[in-house]
Image 1: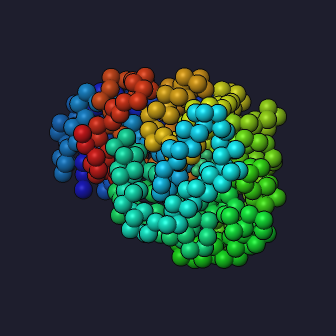
Image 2: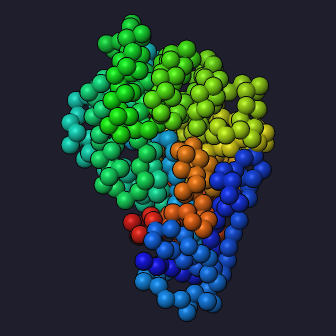
Image 3: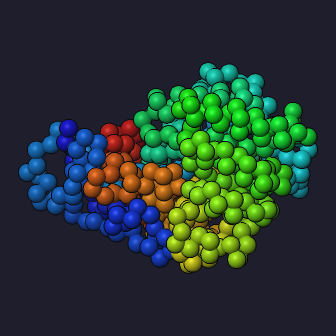
Length: 413
Ligand code: NIG
Ligand code: FE
């Protein structure tokens, strides 16, 4: 099956010359093609064809992109989309001065969402989560990571992963399930860390990989959650079982998570709002991706991660919403792109690299998608804009008018 994305005003390729990732200065080069159409064959990018010759090409289907700009399908690499309930009450408490950590210590926070998830059936969760995924698709997102982490019992973590896998099979985008059983300690193990860790390492991890429910393991390394030593135990077992890793670290406190992530070849270290200056160079031209989540800083009113210093010292930076009910109830990746520009001083090009190829790298999908290069999946976000800076400049608007996954139109305005 041959298709043509015809006559866009601009193709933002984000090509990498086969490196499939952009470190430091490389991320400010996104490369533009004008006067070309994109030939798709069997869901993959086959070629770039001059518009003059595109007229004569025989294809099965034409996708008209006149006056539109085409970007790689956006990659949303860090979300907690699989939650139930609302924490609007906590939001109001914070407006009155309570901190996120104080609320968590008083039994709210993640645990409050755990209660809602435990009370929700598989079917109820499907009904709540489906429109959230559709919302992501309408933004041009063609690859979406979703973590568990609000079940925190054998039964409820598996239930959440089954829900995520239901969408992996039934939604028209790539969905990447991540096991986050080490999000925090559930109330029944609050004073028995050892046995919760044992439950994760000896029961949950083996079952999940055996049943193909997740190939990624994440954890939250924080004073109020898991110590570096506890994460080390979980990661050691996860690696033995063949999982790939991610880590929430250096969000509120620096307790050594980054070194554990690096020790176990984690694909990414996420958050980094309080990363120490000395640690920044650990990302320089290394394989680990710094996943920055400025929505959290905006939502909680705290420090932004040092995106500029990270990029200037050679890091590969990705951006994501961290969509969750407590610390970033923000589901617009476009808004996050605007925040990254305004609050973290990232350039438009760095931001585009961060939500495409670098986000793909954080999910180990960089050789398949994340840029418009021959041989990659024909995943595109088509924007009604004159140039890509409009996406970032029109804060809070959704300029995406068409989402294409493996050559199929899956959303159209
Ligand atoms: O990524 N850091 C921990 N987890 C989420 C917040 C989860 C919640 O508050 O529900 C985060 O910020
Ligand atoms: Fe998170």
